[in-house]
Length: 505
Image 1 (tube, helix red, strand yellow):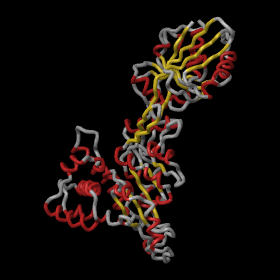
Image 2 (cartoon, helix red, strand yellow):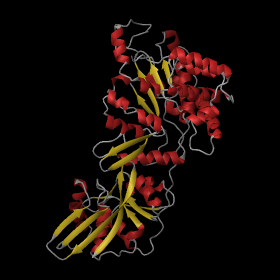
Image 3 (cartoon, one colour):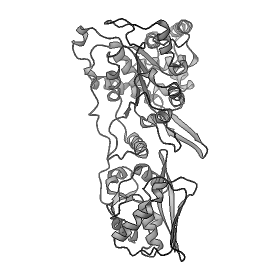
Image 4 (cartoon, helix red, strand yellow):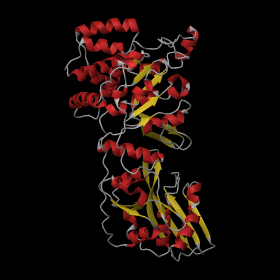
């Protein structure tokens, strides 16, 4: 007999429908699995044999058994195909009716005693089932809350193979138990900005970056507070909406995490400077999402920026512009989401003491130029705010606390609301993402502003990209003030954040 069950394969961050065709026929006893399975999938035969025997199912193995994972050109990886394969084999052997299999997606790894173990990528699989109109999904009990986040699909959580078989055999499956749909909660575990003493310019730049979604570079000696400032940016950003939380959690689920609930805070990813380009932007022989995709809807923090390899940093150019990563392979092209804010930190020189109040710099001018030259001009051109963070005297370190995160976040929320109200018909809601037409429409300077821009362009040698980003930052400064038009003072402050441009020649 031939029976077909359904499961899913995760490629990148998206799931694809997989039909498991199980066929039993007379002949020399042999188990064959085809359809580009990897080692973990091929080893499912041993797990399924033991699980069926220990659960008491009289499955006959003394025949030629063929299992095809269709589409055959899609590589299958992992152990999440066990449950669907076992149910399909039972249906092919006549031990299970097949009427419910076309309406049910099965996901899970089998233990030798028939227990169903959790699987990675359940959330994108359930989202795929909804897109294909599959009314029911059967997932491991450990993934129950993850599956319940998707409305419009009946999610059944099972702990063992017999429970899944009972659901597949039922003519009219009972309604699944009601589970509380997880929702993102308030931000509670992000450090407070009040802990930062002094540094008014850096604090202001952090607020502007949060309000407009701009990229930020902090340059200063060791211990001046660069990392401390960067880690407080997620607390200034608006909380994740339900749609953003589902999208972000699905990326982490596809990557291999097993979230017990929707993500509540915006991601903050801080990879080490030894990371490879595939680890940062994604890829590999089997493409997987990288840090830029894991930071989707959140913040990517690159500490010690010049210590990253040059090819790794240059790989950031496309994601910073297009908000997606395109990975091309022989078998096809994969697009991964990468809508993140970049925050980078670096020392002003190799020893880190250039311009320090406490100790002198020991680096030669040539060493300083070589160190700063590790960051290319095109990459710097994509960073809107470049701010010097000096070390502070003790009197400021021992001074009063700064403004709390709650107060600054309130101003950021108001500014972002003004940006969203200008483009209600499009998905672009942040000034940093405005296209050239949008910049001309909402960020055009007046006559006095144009004269200031002409003088600044000649003095600072601004590129066309720098000019556009300067206007976007000016628009954000105006939004923070509630001013309908860009004024010369907004352009002057935006220029202040470009005066730290590093000499890469």
